[in-house]
Length: 542
Image 1 (cartoon, rainbow, N blue to C red):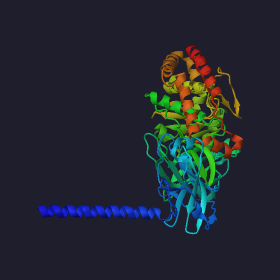
Image 2 (image 1 turned 30 degrees about the horizontal axis):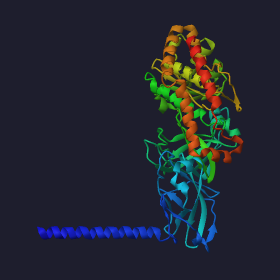
Image 3 (image 1 turned 180 degrees about the vertical axis):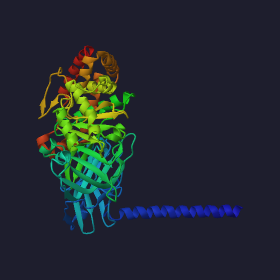
Image 4 (image 1 turned 90 degrees about the vertical axis):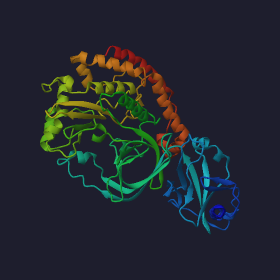
């Protein structure tokens, strides 16, 4: 027994020696390519004090990433030689290892005090020099740490679309893209307190989106994630829902870049605190975007509003209003006769495959007849809308001063019973013209402007007992919690500080000098304080 113990001890000692020797060999293999002594490493990159070893080597340039990777994926790169690295500015340590895609090359950077202060380096947009070095050549690159997720899209091909003619399908004719682009997408997400660093790669199909945004040089996009077979693939991005369809918003109309994000967060609070109805709306997160080795700046990635989010079934319908025009009843009848999914910029978004156009259009048709013309069917008007949801929608839009959201940019979800009766829900969308912002970079500083869709005020006038108690109770409840003035201002400030601390402001302004960001929100805060005080009085008498 004693001999066995001795043999076992010798075997363990031998294995330990082999392990340590192996580790030494690995370290030697990792370091032998750096021909000068390094002062340390950061994210696996050697830090050096001199660059004499570059003498005699060929300096090369590349419009595409020459081989700088993280987690097996090429890091986002622009043709000016800038490598973009997504990092969480709230975490002290740098995350991930930056490597090359070839064992015959190595990376190095200069020793720099900025490496020891991650948060400041990110906030100030510090540019770290980075060299990718081979046997007889090198690339001189710039490494920029972005304090938010970074998305990179590489386009491989494009396909022109046949949109047909207006008479056959005006919805497709007006709203489908002329060109679809196909390629690959990468998302580098540094995570947050609940999510670890994540690198996602897939195929992508995308196109330019938004009729109004198409007039700006900085474009918005719609994209679909694709698997290796080219089929739609669901994936949760940046902590949002798992889906294949996403919107990238350029946020050109808002120089502060916080309006839509703040509004989405407030609507999410309405949804979270109203357990009687599903009123899930768009969620939005920030990211920086690179397309085809061109850094295109700050974007908001937004979840779509659709039948999945709203839990619609086969009997239900979903409409999207994209204009202020209210179609006449005979106009909708014409859409039914023509089997159209659009009439005067109200789009029928669900069901996708329609078997009975009269049935699918009926809820919106009767809704407009009831609340805009006083000519609806015989069913009680209070049953035609979800009062709890409509109260939330009105309180929300008045709170955010939604100048572009009190008929236009609303989704109307009709919950339809087997007998054909319906109850309508409202979900807001496209929330950039809020908190005093108007079309054309104009502002309205008057805190007493009313932004109300017609249905709930109509019901209040006809049956006040069905609206007033519900609205006043809900307003009081919200004001004591997430709609307190202090909380609204704090949401604004948190978004403002996130953008400042991420370092994106200077990058955005350098890339888009005609759409400069302005991080001063003093006027927004002053307006919102006055707005909330006025709303308290307004809703007392609503």
